[in-house]
Length: 67
Ligand code: SF4
Image (cartoon, rainbow, N blue to C red; front, top):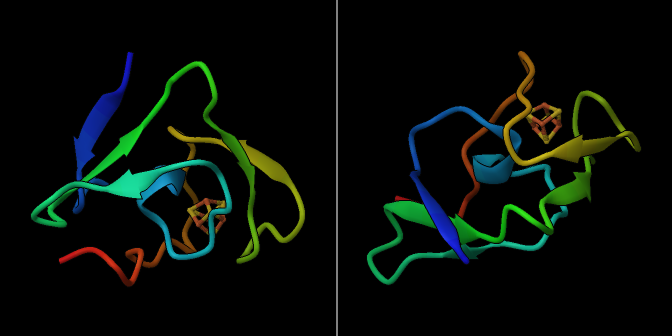
């Protein structure tokens, strides 16, 4: 079952630097992801560590495909 969160919520899943599996919603104001497959590598501040969708850090930057 997919889950969706607003683009402005500061989480790894909405961050420019996260490499997990996700996709923008039709209007690009939400991110859709599978909570059972929500781990991905950080290429930003916590470089190379694997983070889950709900994690966050002070290096968050909105994913550039989102509004
Ligand atoms: S750990 Fe920080 S920089 Fe890395 S993906 Fe998550 S919010 Fe972005």
